[in-house]
Structures are given as structure tokens and as C-alpha cells.
Length: 462
Image (cartoon, rainbow, N blue to C red; front, side, top):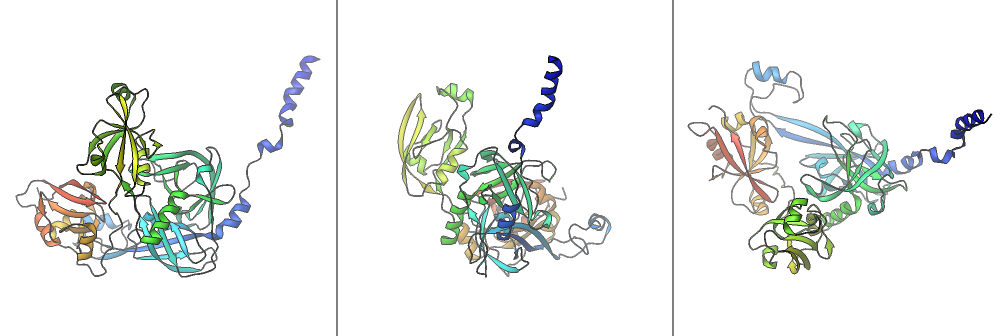
């Protein structure tokens, strides 16, 4: 009798679990209310192709490879590319927030609302470091989003994305917050929100909502081995984006602090060697001569533990803290040096501006056999561009394909020199890259952002 009763209890017990514990959230009201403030962004860009391109159709034409290999040489031609993204309305008078990479280098930007109205948009400002851009359309009375506080997000909390994946407008996807404050390679100015919300091409620039219907982030990128969604999505916290947007609207640029150090992570082994009780802080590898850190007395092998009274638990945190400090501010820095803590005062410098260089409407395009073979299309720099970039010579890369692209040269790079010989024009670049009796590999000095790098490039014909 007891055995039968026990089995009955086991059988019936799941039925007694409160229904509330098994309920999933309903996103219908949120989607209905917030979708009108989310926009579709389409861009067009004219690409200046090199000689030898396909005789017709787009670069995605399946016959391209056939014509390249077996067809007659073709003259240079321009073709148009299109891309899609998302954004959301910040103010009723037409200011829109999106990703910088959605509108970068676009010749034409169209914003489409959920009621099918379309507007031409102009870029008010764009910041590559945080991947934030502000657009403006000529409209009033627009539906706007409510901005939330991403600092109140909790890991495991439900979040919702609305955007235009693959052009499917007003698509709603949901998931949870997987982690906060994520650092990604080459993206150390943003403490990303990681989620498992399905994000695909076209979602970029769209909003990430909490369950209160407040925007807490901008969907920016995914981690994928296939090019499609794999459960790892990353959003820019909205407070970071709003701060950038305000600066772009006010001055057209973003001001960031800089102290002039190269740092690395403090491992367990390094902590032991320096006498630290645990691996913490940012280890200084080198100090820029004459920079803010140098003037403050910071030395190589110092471990920065605090900056402006903020703890530096890992090296990834320091660039964010410094960048968020107003240039010209005098702040305290605590370092670990030779087994003890030392407090210093530092006057924060300013990071060089990395605004996207505007391309001239009537720029002279570089041509020549050597450039064409390497897959390079370049343009001459105007006096204003040289002044903005603080350089005297160089040529702008308009398009990089073939050997140039494989070497790592990108659109927007400025080629300054070839094997330490200054490049003053596209014609001179073509001459310097002509194979002749030159080495098989040459070193291109390339300006990218606020720094310069050497790129090895193999020349054809040797």
C-alpha cells in the first residue's frame, strides 16, 4: 500500500508545480509598442574597380571567375554596391542612432520607417572606435525610443532585438544577457553586452531592449565561424553610445583621454615575479617619450593599479577608463613599482581624432598597370585631407582587391611610402610598385587611424 502511494505521489508531483514558474515571457506588447521607432537603413556605394574586371553584372556574378580567367581584358569600370542595416530614432525631429560600419563610405543613405515612409539621411558624425554613428533625416513627430540603464542589466535577464536581418524589416528576436563588460580584440573602448539573441546581417545598428521596453544597447557584431548567427552577439551599451552621440552632434568628433603607454595583461606568473598578491592591473611595456605618462614619471615595468581613483582589475579596463577621462584633467595614478605602491599625478592627453576622411567628389583616381595587377585603386589627397591627417604626402586607398587585399591593405588606408620612399602621387606609387628588378616583396608604410604600420606586399612578375 505504501509503495503504491509513493508512486502515485511521484506521478502527480509535477502537476503541483506552480504554472508561474514555467511561464515564458510574452514579447508581443513590447514589439508592438517599440517597433515604430526602429528603422531600416539602406546604403549605396560606388566602387571604382581596377582594369581586368568582369564585362558585366555585379562582383557577385557567378561568371566573374570565368571572364577573369578566359575573357579578354576589360577596361576599368565603376559598379554600385548596396548594403542594409538598422537604426532607431533618438528624437522626434529626426536624429537616428546606428553603427558606424553601417554607413561608412556610403554615397547615399536611405532611411525607411515601419509605415513605409522613406527619407534621405545625412551623417552628422561617425566614430569608428565605438562603432557609433548619428544620422539626421528631415522629419518631425517621429516615434522615439526610451533609453534605459545598461548598468542595471543582470546576466540571465531577457532582452529583445528588433531590426532588419537580411532585409526582413521589423524582425523580432529574443534571448538573455550572457555576460557584461566583454572585451573583444581591437575593441577595447567598449564594454560589450554579450547576448544569445539571434543577430544576423542587417541587424547591425538596431536596438537591444530590456523587458521594460527601454533601449540598453546597439547590436553591433557577432562571433561566428560560418558568417551566420552562432549564439554569440555583442551590443554597445547605450550609455556609451549616447555619450558618443552627444559629442558627435555638438562638435562632430569624439574627445578621448590618452596617456601614451603600451600595456599587457598581468598573468599569475608575472604577478608572482613582481611581488603582487594576485594578478591585477595593467603592466606597462613601454612609455611614449614626452607623453603624459612619461611626464608623470610612469616607467616600463610599472603595474597600473588605479587610475583616477578607479580600480584597474585587468589591462582591458585601462583604455576604457583613460578614454573616458576628459583631456587636460589632472588625475591620480597608483602604480606598483619594486614591491610597493606609488601614487603619481598625471595630466591626461588627448587621443588623435579618427574621423573618417571625407572623399573628394572629384578626386583623381590612380591608374597604371602595376596598381591594376595588385588590385589597388587610389586617389590623390586634397590639401584639407592632408591637414586633417597631419601628413605632407600620401595617397588614399579607394579599393583593395587581389594581392593588395591579401596583404592586409584596406579601403581608407593612406599609403605614405614604399620601401621608405615617400609616395607623393598615384602615378609615383604605380612606378614604385612596378616589378622591374625590384625585390619580390616591398614594405608599404600605411597610415591607418591614428597610427602607422608596415604592410609587406608581394609584387607580381617576379
